[in-house]
Length: 61
Image (cartoon, rainbow, N blue to C red):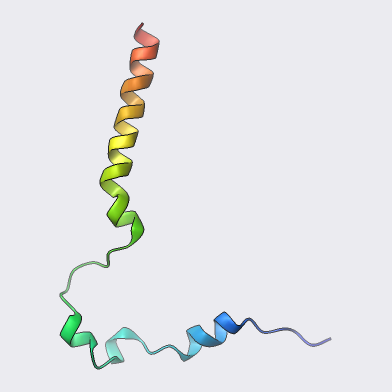
C-alpha cells in the first residue's frame, strides 16, 4: 500500500528560509515577529484580570 504525501509537507520543504530571501534585509527590523498571541496578549491579561475581580466579588458578596 502506497503512503499518501501531504502537499503541505512538500510546500514547507521547498520554502526559502527568510535569511536567504533577498528582501529579508530590507524588511527586517530586528523586532520579534507579530504573532496573534503577541497581538492579543494585552486583551488576554485584561480578560484574566476582569475574571479575577469578578470571582473575588462573587465570593465576597
